[in-house]
Image (cartoon, rainbow, N blue to C red; front, side, top):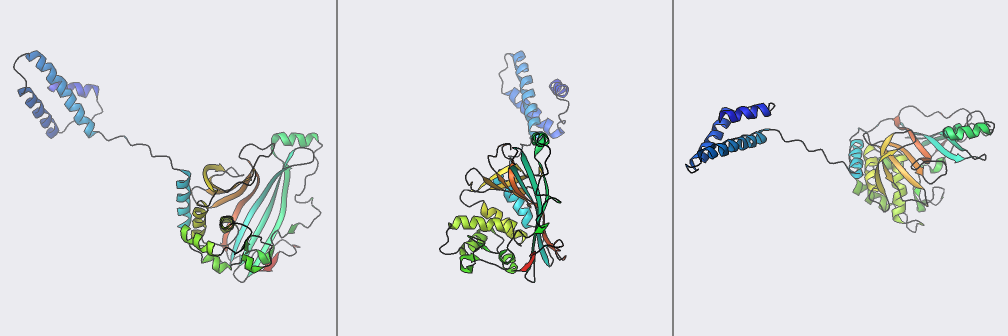
Amino acid sequence: MTREFEFIDRVMPDVPPLTPEQLAATRARLAGAARAKPPAASGRRVMILAAAAVALVIGAIALLLPQAARPPAAATPQQVLTEAAGRLAARPAGTGRYWRLETEELLRTKGEDGYLVEERGLDVLAFGQDNDVYSWYEAVSAVPYGAKNTETWRRAGSPKLCPARGCDKNPRSYPRHTLAEALIFGTDARATNRKANWAPTPAELLALPQEAGALKAALSKRYPAGSSVSRADWMLRAGTRLVRDVPATSGTRAAAYLMLATLPGVSVIDQVRDPEGRLGVALQLPASGGDRTQLVIDRQSGDLLAVQHVGPVPGLGAGVPWMASIIKQAGWSDTRPAPPPGCKGCVGTY
């Protein structure tokens, strides 16, 4: 029997040796098996015992060896979103006198000469705790999109592209938001009938629930009676504004992600890239014609990376956005926003 164990040592050198107790137990089982055999055919019995020894020892070794770890199941897009929302909700609340949202607005359109142009601009919206509001937009650049369009533009004589810094005859900066209505939630942000809209203060927004079900119930109560849009559509717009356009706690924004995922027509898709190439998980809102709106969320931090529109635009690849708001900054600070010099109507109250 010792030879059988020596054989196992040679063919399985990495297997840890049996302890004296395990070896004794194996020998005892073999001895019992030998006593149960008839006295005849002793040679054959030796061969059977040898095979049994190998089988028993290999079985014992298999029990001793660590089990191979099973690869974890791939997370579903909903699980990725839930985990990202959880990390966002756990973030400490920001502090400061002013909440500021800074985005880079992107638009890819086909010019008169048949090539795609990419326009970019800086958009700022800020709220103060003393009811002041700030908003300004400035065109930054306009360039051909991609190598093929750049070559077409050059063949056309490299005409100057606007809007961009230094080429627009209009004022350099101007407000893109109606300041008095910057916090209005409703079917139409331009509506003057306050009963048809919900116009919360920053304090009310900061007090909203931080759990998806409770937030959904709270927003549903704000749905204006007799609205021209369905309750689900109103909830969709309100939830999108909460995560993008207005002051809200990290917990409320995380709850809004999860609430939006439960609304009709909304899907969660993973491995989506924003215009900057950043990878995220996206809430894809119900399509309008061929246009799909995607809220791209950082998979690790839970921060909103961009709100982008994807559609069948000639010259753009599948999944490439034709319009987007890329989030550059969103949070609180004590620094008072300072609109560019000469920006008319860029400061107001709400």
